[in-house]
Length: 166
Length: 368
Image (cartoon, rainbow over all chains, first blue to last red; front, side, top):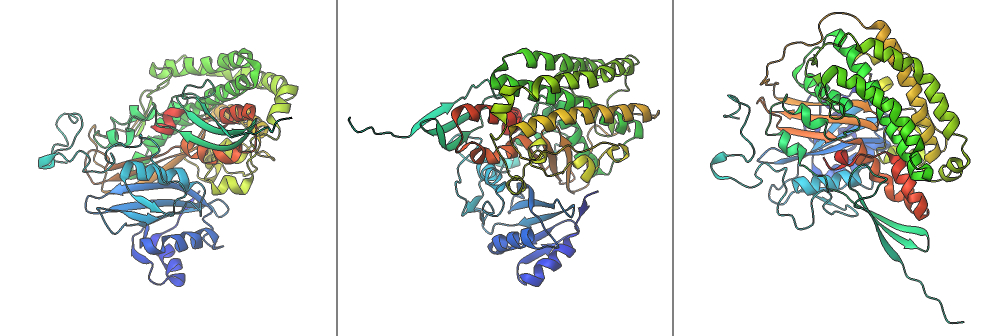
């Protein structure tokens, strides 16, 4: 069974090497500041205890007042996984460092996050849109996509009787 | 003799290419017959599934998932339902877990039959092996039709279990399929694995070393053919896989041939697993009641399965409302394309086709 490393455990390991990198920690994840993302990612990959040689996925999440980029990492030899998060400082012009040179598998996934969420990855070797065509206006997975007034969301009517307030 | 000058030639493969299940365009730069650069263009099938899912309830989202990888719809349903169950803390009845294992393994048989058949088709066998493979695939689809009425985009696995119990004619029909499978798999091994053309075209083409496979997040047969014995059914068991005896087939060279062998071996292991699951199949309910508009507590969950193509994961974020706040799919087909350039550059045009076919992508899942 894959062990899901607890946030404080990972945060402690990161703090020993990078005292200022950790912003926040919860039971299931660690939030680090974007400037130290690349060295922390390389540390997580190469440290023999953590050994996160395998990048499972990269996800962008729009929390309306800020973005989060979520990295799921795993070790195939030690069979554990951990969740690393980072928060681009600026909602208007979000940017985090790329990890595509640390994990080859990040290349397409960062392009996807950039395409759908609009988060730029500095240092990415080939940051282009991947699913939508060049010149498509906006980034559809943002919560304010289409920017309807009055808090209305685009989309079809909801399941009868629920969710009107959500 | 006048000076001969050459210049690189850019060739578009696709968007409609018969070696891909779906619409996929590859821009290949050629120097003579050798490939010097590859760029992939996807998105033709993009349906913004992740955005749509944010507008619908958790249960309404199940049918979206089987339209991603439409050649293994059951596995997609399963991965999504596991993620919702993890998010909401739902326990599934034991019988449902066994039925899920049977369905997931049947789906693996159907998917690999298609993958192997299409691959040999790309090599130039035309349709004979593909038609043979369809014989087994059709029987699996008959079994799906018995349980849920659909053959391709099945929608059988539900949050909290499965939709219906197995019909009485299911297990006898499954038994007949299981009895003939070993003979069929042997037939395919004899037909394909020592065929001179397949050996000549598959060995040493599309080579993927193990360290690159791990670094590039490969999963499924792509990873195992490179010699990495990593299978989530063993490493991170879900449902009742921890009660099953089976082996993880691995390759040595990580080339097209090894991936073919790994898929054929996985057919055998799937038959083994189904036999054990049928034998141990307990009675009892197949579903727990879940409210139609369920509201999982705020939080996040990531659940993953070993889908036929590799690690299929769903990362769900809930804000406590009736719809997912964020619905992210970790699609093996997209991520397995990460090494397309490494696999193709240096090879010939002819090898590019079969290597692309051998990655076993479904574009519905690449584009979502």
